[in-house]
Length: 186
Image (cartoon, rainbow, N blue to C red; front, side):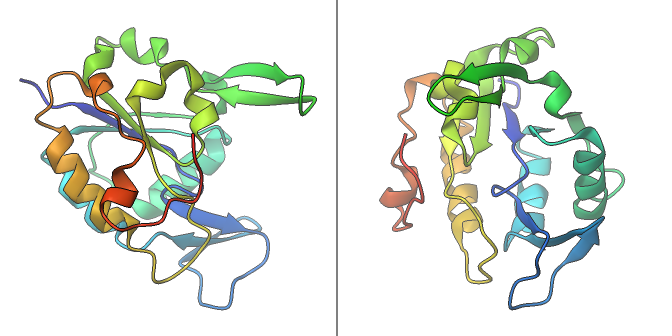
């Protein structure tokens, strides 16, 4: 069985970026943004390197995605792709009267991946609304230095890597099952 494709969102999943600094030292500056890495994020990428194919897909701009990943990942890290807002579908939401950017996994299928082997870690479930069975929902990271979600995620991903069809696993309660409060519900 080939390694599963593991796709990560950036903002509030891997890091927190804000125009105002928090009450602790930031990890780096990117333009006008103070950026705070989620605790254990580098450990997570080290863990994933030999276990999964890894990709990044954000609804932010390409420059932002490149800037954050340049500072987070080593230059030789083998990403399958780094996609940004340009690869998202724009959907108009009547209730909010706003455009939202949706991540449609049909683009990933065109790269040769079956949806049964694709996991997507994101703090905003509605951005993956067409493919919720592929979602590993994660509580939003807003800068807390005592966040331990990624440690639990590594443990959970170890279980999921052996599953034949990841869509058949209900992943909504994975954090609660490990004693971690979830910030949002589906």
